[in-house]
Image (tube, rainbow, N blue to C red; front, side, top):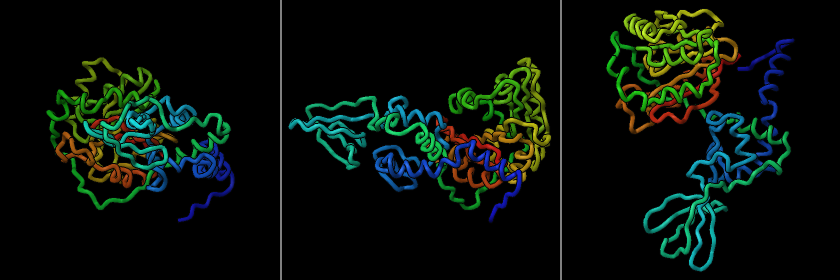
Length: 360
């Protein structure tokens, strides 16, 4: 399919792309593969080195600011698995690398040339880990403009979407399991405050809690948007909305509205919403394509869609596989409807947290 853009709209479109740094992407790729030497240590789509983290999906896992910091000051934010491991043999040989495996008898690491090395601990004079990265700082190696180019390229890396075979769609039962929605250990499993804090909701925003259930997130969202903001709780079950109404009154919140939705449409006005939040409910949508199209219509330009679902890839899934979806399932269904994956919230212990932006 070809997209033809003409006239003033073309200028506006290209200006928007430039503002987002998209025109810098080719230059950034050239730096990554050439002057920066980044591919020697990092891989993208299984091509490149293995000393540093795989960057195939870094654009949805890290913000532009975080990526820039890693380029200019690699020691500022470093995962423990990439701490520098330094071994000194009894013969006086010193080897640096990142740790691969370790037990009481031996340690394996990948040295700075990318080669795996194995050492018996009885043959070592010293073994230590240092909270520093093997990656050098590029603050003085690249110009500010080149760093901008490299950041733009890395932010453009959003992984490959392999469309999975048709999944089984679980429609919501007439009476959802209230005990599951109100279980005592839910906060520990879902980290609601950390999740919502990461969204940086502005005061006065209009937010939709779609598939709100018993209102677990509704009141938390209402507190974050403030009295001048608005939270619209949508559910297809009146009994759930009744529970939310009771909870809202108890918490003395005056900025929550209730909407009895339909399976194909949340019943919201077009272009009026800043963010639509769907937690543990998307898998129940019987007609997700129609619902997503309606969600897109209700969002403002560049509005956000946040989808949280228990991860099919997690072996410790608390739902025992009943209410889970894979990352690829979510992306393959949501992105074609007119959304761009902006980032992945990878701090949730059992769930996928995906933040999408409405495309023009």
